[in-house]
Length: 300
Image (cartoon, rainbow, N blue to C red; front, side, top):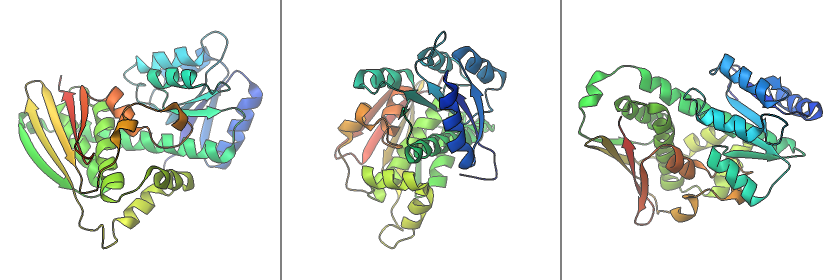
């Protein structure tokens, strides 16, 4: 976790004992926490300062305004729609998880909590939020000439370059937040799973140790990976932006990642493609062996 910036989490649960357990683990790990004991109190906190929190740990079953209703309100609010929600639940059925995923909860925790899993999931959610917030801020800086762009070609290799390019492209888009998230996911996937050949289990292990970024950057310095690039082409087609991302890897079976699998709900990774497809793009099409993908984004 980045110690230069306090990481504030909102914990929402109608059971004080659960709040105490969560708070103990998260404060020990260096997080700053605020608590709400019902959905109405949680919503009041979120509306009072929408930019304060980096993730919300939200109990699904609460009297009055329950977790699903809070989540739906967040998704309908432009300032809160990309804030990561970690749904806490005692119900681990595939149907319940799928309902939450479709409503926007891409992280799940089951009760009782396991400390290591809790910290890995929270770290993944916070990392997602910080990455997308960085891209969003870059996209907010005015660069008027970008609206004149019709065609462009880019080549990149690092995670920082992927984030900067996503921010640049989002300057063409009227509502950049969700597009920024999706574009970043596609380019980062091309780096880690494409050019570096990292598998699902490899990334999961890196995320659980909290050293994903450091290990990816170390791998990129190895001779066998140092010259590999990700190629991005951009074309305007009327009120749509067509972005093609190609890597130099061997490809992968992308079909099983287009829809989120509830069996992966409790892992810190494995949701990027399905999130991007559901939230960021008009369409998302993988081609050939999976090392080429085309995303279509509405500009206005």
